[in-house]
Image (cartoon, rainbow, N blue to C red; front, top):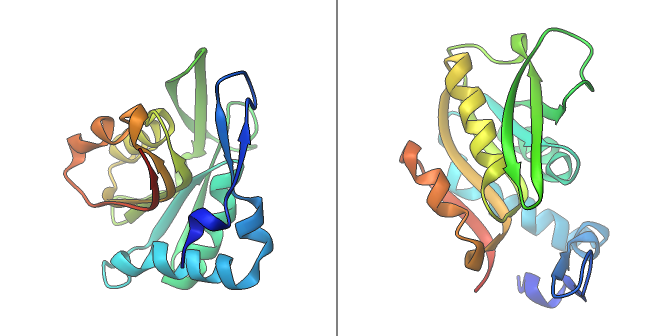
Length: 173
């Protein structure tokens, strides 16, 4: 499927000079959304994934659906203070500051084989933070699956440490 013809580009949003890639048209189109889930899961169907790890908010759209298709559980990564039980957090860098994501400590076991999923790989900060959380919790990272990758931001470079597959459906140079 030609996803680039469905993704809407919004110039100068959220700030001047940024060309925002709006995925909501893909989510709203049943055939495109199904195809995206199938295509994002395809390289990992036989990888023994036990959990899919997605960050709020757009990572939940793809992550929960992919977990269902892969027969796996879903681990929600949330902003600090949003989860009600015992958590483990990881700080990461954003374009203009820092943030912290957290998971419930008991959502991951050392037997888990985890796939990190998100809508966009940009600078790699969020995905890298999720990988560090997986390391801290003693589970195995099996790979990454992204709907969009913004190659010009070089986020992939941060993820190479783990030597696992990095799969992106749509790439912008």
